[in-house]
Length: 341
Image (cartoon, rainbow, N blue to C red; front, side):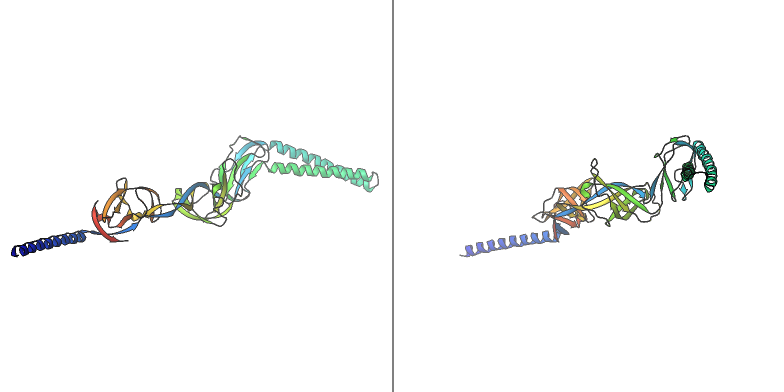
């Protein structure tokens, strides 16, 4: 009996010692676990930010054309010249049109003299009413021809229809111009617009009055504009439509500058994590994933679009997996962790 009791005490002692060592080991592991914060990987709808290239234009823009067929004698402006309304831009060869004025002037003077004689004869009842009216009509026709020739002569002096800046010059001295030929482009410096071609798929997504973001790289500006008008129809070849966006007055902004319109729209649902979960190692994108044993395992991921506070995950993670978002600096692959969402 004594031997049996002694054996029993030895077993109890060993069991108690093993239990104490196991509890001690667990306590050590728990005390060595590193404190982190984590979140679950979620599926969420992303925002697609599309860019469309366009140009800054003037709200008031005019193509200056010739109304005559003549040779360019003189050009009074250059690209970038600022002009006022009525300022001369160019002068055409006027010799032919001066001759036409002189001819019309002579005919008018002759018809005016004839009419004076016919008027005196009619007062004396020496001619009929019909003859008098014919003389009067000839005088009126000659006067109209003179005014017409004088008007054409005035077209030989190309002037600015309003105050602005010359942004294009399509002629040089000696060029032969014809009616309808573009000579200059004149634009007002203010106010300005942004013109852009958009795909027809965007036609139902924007409306007049919408506020949009526009970047102007040349001056490093990001501006807020408002859609003022757009073409209701779509170009059948390019499948695009034109949108015109009003711009605020901004230093350094001028017609002809390149810009990008940013339009955001809801995208497909994708896996997303906070940007703070990403760990950069050279060119690699990694995250710490907490497994079922509460260990942080370093895993390679492939990222997609980046939003202000979240990042799209294309591969490497599954929904509801736990990823560390704080405390990665003190972690190594395989570390035991403890934390909270």
